[in-house]
Length: 78
Image 1 (cartoon, one colour):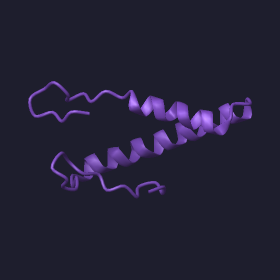
Image 2: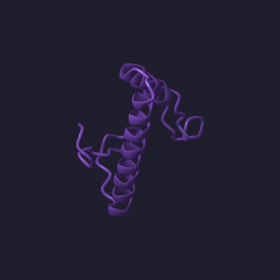
Image 3: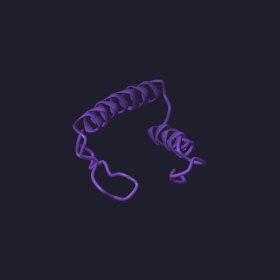
Image 4: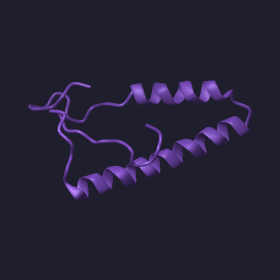
């Protein structure tokens, strides 16, 4: 999905997150991240970095994210 807010946020059991405040925060985070990624992508491309190299860098960053619940009881592995 590529449109802002088009994601269905689900919990560990696959149920939609229904708390209005949580969904609002997730949507705000989504919008902020999209803008930051777009800005970084444009900066890199305008400075001569190949677009595919920028995308690969972002993918590495995503794969390096750590699950804050991993190792806790009830936490899902990343």
